Image (cartoon, rainbow, N blue to C red; front, side, top):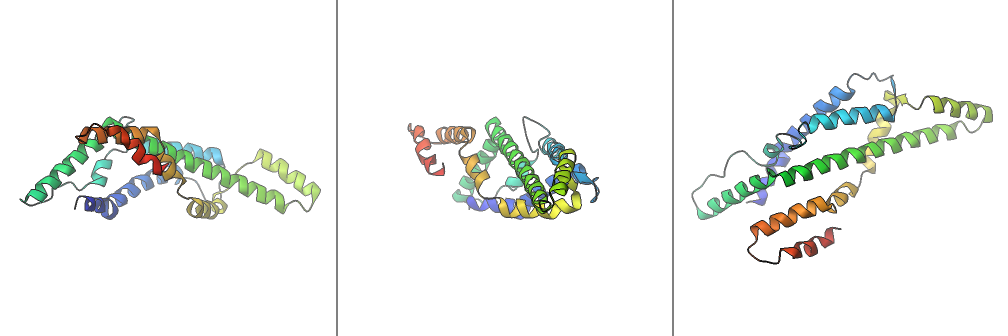
Length: 214
């Protein structure tokens, strides 16, 4: 029943999270016309705006994230199992409100935005390479095209959107999750939680338990 609490995030919380991010993206990119040419620098500025909007408070990034993760009310009932469950939920809330969790969440946001920026830059490089290949038949035309690309590094937004969508959706693997699981910041928080809630003195073995995630 405790693990079932995560269902709240998939049924409700994730929709609220998407709304917060979508509103920030619309504010950052909604003013750009489809025919307007944009480059990696424009996306970097937009992503920075989204990041600052999402994590407005550096000490508590993504305000309201707790209500997205867990239901606001305690589980009703007067049995021992229900009482234990509510204690576990309360302790989980305490963990999610710690500075350690805020740092981990901030790290995830930073890593996610960096990964997204790198993916967009790679997409631009691929599009430029494709344009150079298409113009390689005529040497003079190819040289002129290269000079033009050197000056104008952008593409119309209408041309970019489908390429970016395909690249970001189909190209993203488990690299982000794997990188986060290897972060010392996350490992340290897990070890602290393990040590705080376990009655044994062998909390150091948490590093051994985390080894398969590396």
